[in-house]
Image (cartoon, rainbow, N blue to C red):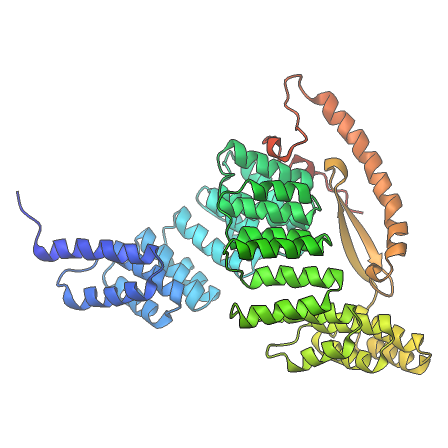
Length: 505
């Protein structure tokens, strides 16, 4: 029996070390080891080595090394290997461009599901979900769960894509594919976007029955989802039942209470997080600042903002500054908020200027309102609400000529106040899409008027839903399971069947 040569044994050992470093995220060390292997070993490297090192190139963005490896792969006649092809497409998509990845994808003659999934995933992560869907429709191999996961995640995070994401999930179930952890995590943003409490309960129930529930990512996502729907009791129960409470779990609970106006409770939870020796991150402080903003705690917000930078050495993002400007503006400290805006080391967002402009309308501050309105006309030139707010500031102070000037400017720029919006209504599981028009300005500026307009429509939907529910119950078999009121006992079957009803007006 012939023994393997020393060089061959060395190659096997080094390949194991290389793979281990890639899996551990030590990509720079993996690339250094690859250079050593390529220069010192007399044996040719196998496809497994190249696929591993291409993952590191994509992770740390080394396009030059990636393209040189591509050339070497072509010369070695291993470019047809599916694992190598997947990693090459992924490397070009993350290091060069999605278009370059698509060009290489089209050159691959024989594609398996892994190659298709890689290109679809690149489109979804690049906010090109339409391209991902078009590619999905022309697949010449059977899609798997990973194929659907990428598209569901892309749809869930896109504008007005929540319903499409859940419907696409139902399409996956019709093929007999079983959801995994990634599927549930991709579905949760869609459920939050529609405030679909019943679907969130069913996701939790499915996770419990299939032993996915203990995963900390899913539990943190459920805490956030229940918080978005106002179910703080459910959110707290899941958090209390979580054994490993990392920074994501704590941040999700803080954000849940902050979103629902429970500012003092959110800040108390933050204190408990510090006592538990869990290091907060930027998202944690974003929830803390939002809690201060909802409660008008300006001094507390300034204190937490300073602690974030000085004690925890965290860099403030534009979102942190926007929250700080918002809480100062709500408290009537408009000039302090403007000073923050002037001294911001990051780009000022429309959210920050909008908070100042809205407060100027509340407190009748014309001078700062003009500054904020001018800034917003440059940042968001097509948002009619900014012009309307500024015009109302002028009108409230009796300066009607300036108000007319703003309206003329709005008309000259072609900004239209008459735009179509949409509202998803889910009374008791029924899903309907209501289209409405926004006259002169957003209905959010007139909450009382909005309620008067929408309340009769909701009543109509509830009546339609009542009839629909009666029909569904009458058609159920005697042995059909019903959902218990607790979120952990939601049924798995027909997770999103109600979403097949789309009553767009």
